[in-house]
Image (tube, rainbow, N blue to C red; front, side):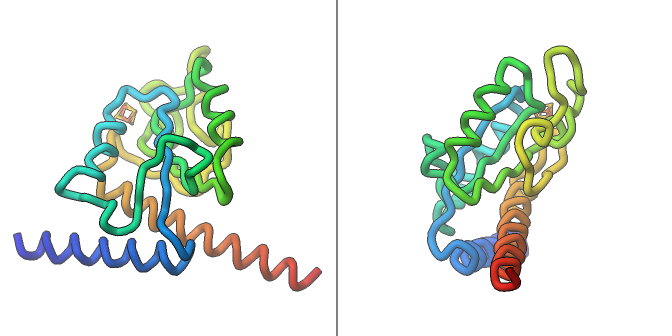
Length: 166
Ligand code: SF4
């Protein structure tokens, strides 16, 4: 039990430190369901429950994409929800970090690619990080958030270097 608690504090500290280093503020996430069975959504909802309580580390889920730095997308994209995903992405604030949550969002999962389903979030919008699993555990989602911050940092440095070179 003690080990679990120590690990929780460790990833929490890591999250808080990386968010501050990379963004210099708190991280705001908009959850987008683009056609999931709701399994991934239930797992994601545990991130703010009293066990994980990620809000204490400077993360919040927001209702508007205009307030969001990151989109966490669940479900392969159904044709019915394709437009909603496109609009949410275009409304999101920069840097528009997209994290695909679960096998369906990563590549179609059990629904695959059909007349009704695109088969993965990257068919519609650019994805920073893929978190596999059906559904993935909340710990894997936290790892995905950390990887997205790393990816954003790398891209920002590359853009900075290109601006200096040109
Ligand atoms: S990955 Fe699994 S749990 Fe998540 S939306 Fe697909 S079928 Fe549901």
